[in-house]
Length: 505
Image (spheres, helix red, strand yellow):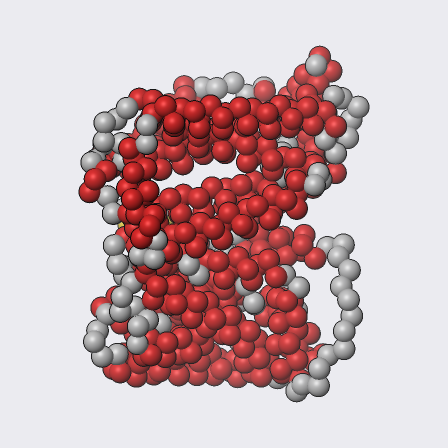
């Protein structure tokens, strides 16, 4: 430990020389005060929801809320598995991890940070569950037990993610378990929201009135299981492979650099390069297709090599339906979720377009004009966006009467897919942020125009190109013929401007 402390002191000596001034302490106190003021209103609403009578809670709302909490939990564990979760600073990764120092002592700060983050995430999830269910009598044991169950679940999941990072068999098992948990949560949430879970309605209504002794027993069992996993993880730190820590630290360092330099576009490049690096791909002959369609075939082959991404996109199609039940109908957040999900699905099929923009020589080598290449590159995003919209509308039709009940709603899918594909290609070609643009002073504070323009590039085309469909979805008119005509005109204008701009370029 003395050698480790000395090594850390040498590495962090330049930062240790600077002493904290009263300005530093004032800034820290002011930041804490601002965060407290911002979080006061959400915490007040959550507290009022907790103490509200549970008898007035709709079972469908309870089922949907619990499904969203389970999905959030699975997403947090998947994010921890993707990030590391044991990571150290670049200096420690370069000098301390490969050194003969005790591996457990080197990784102890990272393990403590992970433990604190897991406890905080567990408290937030526990309070969210209590907000969904409500606690009529506000029993201390019931509230503490629910929070302890959530904290134990987060700590145990983080410990399992650490064991998976080490390369144990838990790696594949954890992925399968998270996928199964997310699928079960989506199916259960849709079933509860659609009314198909009528036998469960009494169970959902009785959840807020579960005896405190049962909750305490479940909390004790969960804490014992989480403690066992944490002890096993702590023992595994002494034999933790250095390659896993160095690789995860490099990913986190690259992501941090991209965020600090305000270049979030680099994150997708980093993730794509890290995925395909050191992978062997089987060579297959191309089908006999025209030259422009061959470019679309390459993009389709790339998507086929990543079935996990396609499965995640398909599962995310149920989120607008769950949001519709949680918000009480087709509200603006549901429309935003539909548009954002379709745009995300389309953007996952634009890697070839980004390569063409970075290196235009590839298009010339293929012997395809720029206009034909852009049209071919738009085919996979359009098909993927259309498939995602169809799945999302089908899920909405299960939980909401009138939403996709008529054939006219499905007619919006092929009309909205091309503008969304054009928006995804526009996002792929926006390049880095222009930090030379001025800062605009507004009543809400200064707004840098560079990041603002970078963020809305592509989203503006999607909103304008799908405005008639989104309006019809929010208004729910009896006849949608006029909205279909307006959507067809918007699609023709968007695609025409896209191809015309390619010809002029």
